[in-house]
Length: 178
Ligand code: IMP
Ligand code: MG
Image 1: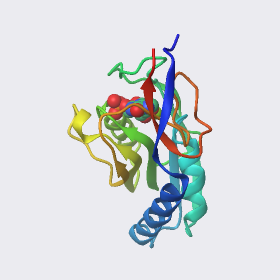
Image 2: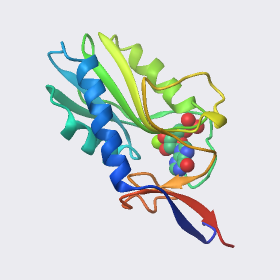
Image 3: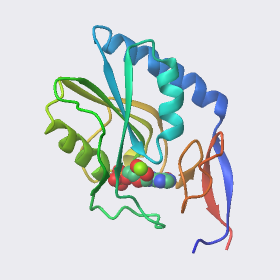
């Protein structure tokens, strides 16, 4: 069950689109020599971000997905990360970009990077739409970050609270009213 809440707008759809465009340019430059970039989205929170990001990338791109255990209906990380759905393709010897929605404690990204590094990619970089540096428990940072945000629980643009609000076109913060 979730407590009653309202959503206060934090980052507009326009601001997100501008930032995604700028990030895509940086990624294109960083991977300019690649024959193929495997873009790995972490399900489910990154699905909107990865969709917008790959459409801005003028590179030969393959899209794959990885699902790791999530918060369930909680606001806090379990700090235990399990692979629920593995990649379909091989990344051995490939250039890989991992796409995450939010880096919070850092447990998820840290685990995913270790897991994928063991598959021997040629190069592995990471991008997170949002970063909450004040919440970090593991010293890790994505190669690229969209926006640094304060310690607020956010929804929208793919990100959920108990599976709700993923379809909001902007990022908003959850404010409990009850
Ligand atoms: P971490 O393992 O604590 O870094 O958590 C990262 C994951 O927690 C992200 O992939 C998100 O799915 C989820 N998460 C962290 N903060 C929020 C939030 O404010 N709203 C929704 N999900 C969040
Ligand atoms: Mg997630």
